[in-house]
Length: 228
Image 1 (tube, rainbow, N blue to C red):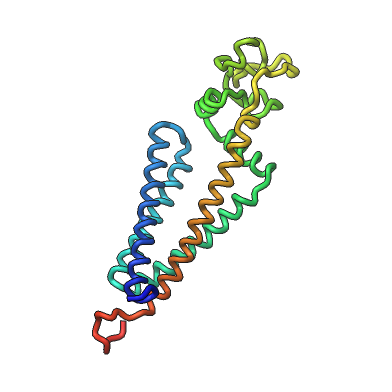
Image 2 (image 1 turned 135 degrees about the vertical axis):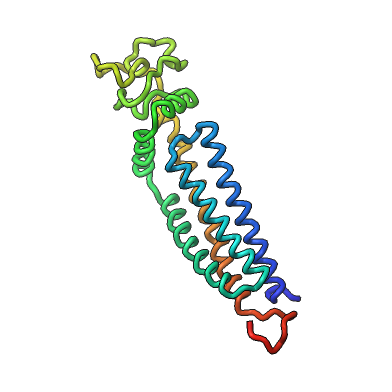
């Protein structure tokens, strides 16, 4: 059977949905691992990632069963759901690629404000930075254990925590701010997320096209007089 025929469409759609199932397991596994090792502490964020993985898994499962059985109803619902997923993912991917520096900083600041002191402390130790911005020395745990504070232990930003009151707001911090340290990584994260999302969104519209084509084809092994 030449490519584009019934068997080719069936095998292509099945293979595409197997790929989606693998991607869903990766999403669920990465989110669960991140929760275990406390890389991600926001239950809402972890739950959202896991929910996306579960939703993609069941959507791909519907498509796989529909492809194997040439089931008209399953293929119809699969086609509609996959097209909606394409619209959402394409929009989010474009938004990630189009976000400017001020918007990235605002989103990062929002995440910093919502994070716990434990998460902020982990970021500061890992990146050897102190506070989100130097202009806001109060909004972070103590940085006294950082290497950049060893030569200047009395710097205000190094010992600052939520229980201390500032006596001198003009102290110069010897450490770089976390925004300075993580700016390139944040930018890379947005570009990578947008690029990957855009790539997979086009595989989804390909899946919709294959489904439409496959759904309107007749199984050559079936009774020629029957209408599927």
